[in-house]
Amino acid sequence: MSTEGRRTGVDLARWVAFVGMVFVNFGIVMRGPDGAGDTMWMAEFVDALAGRAASLFVVLAGLGLGWTARRSSRAIVVKRGLFLFVLGLANATIFSGDILHFYGVWFVIGAFVMRWRVPVLLAVAGAVVVASALMILSLDYDAGWNWSTLEYTDFWTATGMLRHMFFNGWHPVFPWFAFLLLGLSIAHLDLARTKTRSWLILGGATVSVVAQWLSHELVANFTPELGAPTAQAVFGTSSIPPMPLYVLAAGGSSVAVLGLCLVVADIVPWLAAALAPAGRQTLTLYLGHMVIGMGCLEVMGVVGNQAVDHAVYAAGIFCLVATVAAWLWSKRFAKGPLEAVMRKCTG
Image (tube, rainbow, N blue to C red; front, side):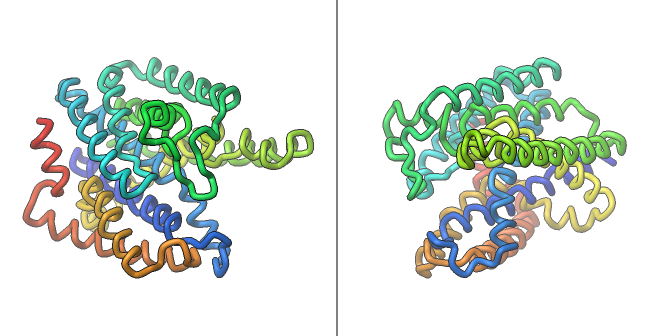
C-alpha cells in the first residue's frame, strides 16, 4: 500500500466515523421519549453506535496528530486546538452534545505529548482511564446534569464548564483523552504493511469482544448485590458513564474499523476514493449536520417526536447528500471550507 493509499484508508475511516455520528445525533434529537414505533433492530443499531463513532473520531484525530508531529510545531497544534475550542463553544449554543470544544482541549494537551514514545503514551492512557474510573466512583457524576432532557444545567459557568470538560461531560478529558493517546501510538506503526493491518483488525476486534463479554458476565454476577442500574453503570460498556470496559470496547472497535478501512482502500480503491473526500472534510460536514441537517429537522417539526426508524432514514439521506457534495467540492478545491479557514487562521 502506498502512502496515498494509506491516507485514503484513514480518510475512509473518518467517513465511517462521521456517518456513525450523524446516525447517533439524529437519533438523539428525533426520537420520542417513549420509543413508540421503534423497530427493535434499528434502535439497537443506533444505540450500538453511541460512543463508538465518537471514539473512532478521536483515535483518528490522535493518528493525524501523530503524523502532524513530524512536520508541525506545538504552537500550530495549540492554535488549532484553540480554533476548535472557540468553534465548538459556538456550536454548543445550538447543540449541547458538541464534541469540537473537547477536541480543542485534547489538541492543546496533545501538543505537549505528541512526540512521546509509544510505551509512555500507552502507560499514560491507562492512567487516564484508571483515574477517570476513580473519579466517577468517588465524585458526584450527576452534578450539572438534567438526565430527563440531557441538558447540562450550569455549562456556561466556570465551574460547570470545567467539570463538564474534564469529568462528566459528553466526552470529558478523563477518560476520552486516552483515545487520542491510542491514536498517537498507532501513528508510530507502518500502516502500509499487511501484517500491521491484520493485527489492527484481529487485535482490536478481540479486545472489543472480550470487553463486551466480560461486561455481560460482571453485570449479571453483580446485579443481585448492587442492583441492575449500579451494576450496569460500573461494569457496562455505555459511554455514559465511561468506565474502563467501555474504553476497552470502544477503543478496540475503533482500531478494528481503522484496520478494515485500510484493507478496503487497498482492495476496492475506487470506492475508498469516492468516499475519502467526505472523510477529509469532516469538520465542515460535522458543522453542516448540526446547522443544516438539524435545522431542517427543526423546520419540519420532527424533533423529539419520531420513531428511531425515521431518524435512521433521515440520517442516511443526509449522509448520502453530504458525501456527494464533498466529492463534488473536492473536484475544485483541495480542502473543505472550514478546513481551509482553520489552516488560514492557524498556519
